[in-house]
Image 1 (cartoon, rainbow, N blue to C red):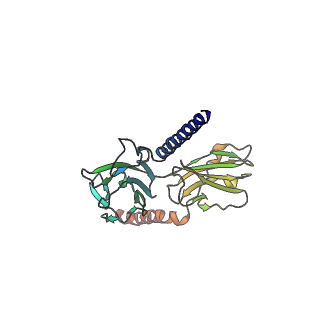
Image 2 (image 1 turned 180 degrees about the horizontal axis):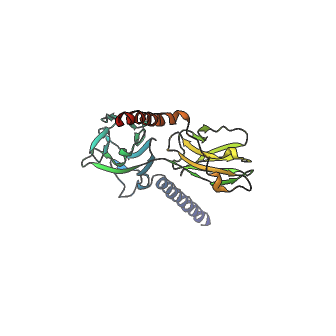
Image 3 (image 1 turned 135 degrees about the vertical axis):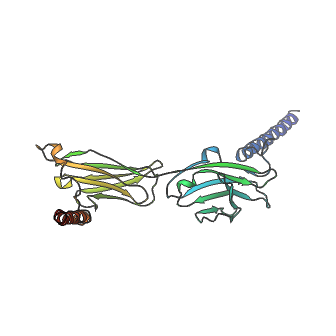
Length: 286
């Protein structure tokens, strides 16, 4: 009797273990394929790009990417890009209708990604773009592109004591900026030599360049310019003050003096006019 009970217990044990294994396997499948067994799971083409990735910002002159992801796309169905402000169809599938060669469609084979690429983005490119699938009825998803003019902004002291360190920071509102950042002193480019050091780094918010000049002397006074190759430049006037001198006295003579070549075209016509008047006036009095 006890042997029979033991056999039944073993059967029940293995049966329960088998059922638990099935439940666990099903749970893992659902985790890897969310919504697959749900009655509300989408059937047919549908978009996968979340709203947080449909507001795109880029800087003037850079490349903008609008990423549209479409799942379960049928063989006869096409993904198109439309510019909403003029309802211009930019593309259908990989076929481009835009005469502007800055527009391209990127679609890695076998993926659900249909990316609209806009090179050298201009302010006029800003606005709403629509990723559309030619289902019946059509489905679409809107993307908003903003184009920001990129410019530099220099931060630093106006007056520096002789012998101390000049620290200037140039902030460019362009994350991971493409190109270089050059520093100029009175129109001459600064090298990474001697007391001068330049360090530039970028992150997801901006690009920052630091200029450091150790043991500053009066010769380091003048105009400093931060000139990014892909953004508008900015300048600052620095006065290196020797102990005992008044900062106000340093303002005169600081900067780049106009050259004779610049003044000549301005002064020469004035001199000729004055000479002409000097010759004409005695003749008129006769």
